[in-house]
Length: 136
Length: 387
Image (cartoon, rainbow over all chains, first blue to last red; front, side):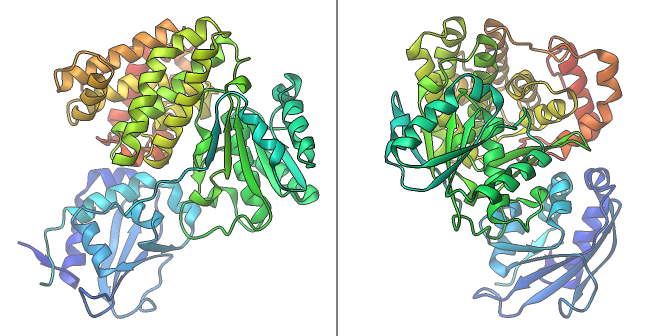
């Protein structure tokens, strides 16, 4: 069963994948910090949407599609176009390379993010595991 | 979309002469005391004098430079106000020079936050020249900066593409004085760069050729350079190999051998090249069941037996261990002289630091915590990986 992207059901499945991942549980065991992911409108999708993922000590505390970046408190923000997010979810773009080529923009305590590259990589593995249906 | 980034590279015998025509006022030479003692700093200063450039020297860089050293150098740069910063030496002074340059132009940045995101806005005050005296780390042509956090005893992989050198001077005469042990350590570092650059998950067409050629040069010339330091053909080919490998892995990435080597080096101060070369065969054996093809291609290019599968990858690991033995380097952590109890006491930290090293993101097969423990233990004992 595929989950429509972007949707609240999709982000809940992403959260479920993270919570099922022993690799993330292990690598993120010291992580504290919530994220807002912004999917910016582009020619492939007309509306900007926002996702919230709360992460604490290797588990997701909460996940939701939200109305705006201000709708929830978070410490980390990652923005990219719909097309960039799609490529990431399809496994065609490594988001770390995406950050380095400015396809993604990151806001937050960079030193802390850099301290946990393994957990970041496992989050990417989890997002690729979500069976996703994109708008045609 | 990706980038291939390189400085202007002036190479070959006499390359240092390019300094005679440098345009500028003041240079800060970032180096270590050995370079001063060997007279290599004076060589550089003589050329700068011809260009009418005044030189100041920061020679406090230690092996595995610390954040504190980078801050001290940046303070001197603030005092001197150079328009050229020159990193002269092995990887340590060159990486320190890059960090000092960033902190000189951006004193608002925390060293640990020098990362390849956003913009640094460099080249408003100074530009960077790198002159390697080892063959080598490839640091002269990469944007990577490795600094040591002396509190956590951990190496940090930092850097931003903007902090790549403007000019890299690859003059084999600058490396001709290396003793055999240093020649071996740094030559093997170049090999690991070539192999990891070719086989990591970020490998690319633009770097593959550089990595293949670098690996071939190391296998052909390293033993000669180690056994006869006066062999200038071997010295020059190794110096070029290191730069090729640097361009290769600097634009692709390194991988797990570097993650493990950084971890060991942070805890036990094993020289970088010795550490990463020691781990490389074990990481090849670990990756081989899942992704043997790239290793098999590399083996074939160098004329080693190639069955195109896991056996070929393991044969490559064997050849690398054989080269390490030929040049007198250890192939296990025990042979590197680390006492077992001390190693086991640090094992959890070694594993944690390796798994969280930025170089681990390109591993072809990401090990779990327990698998990484086993990798470190097998590497201690010299046991080929069988899981």
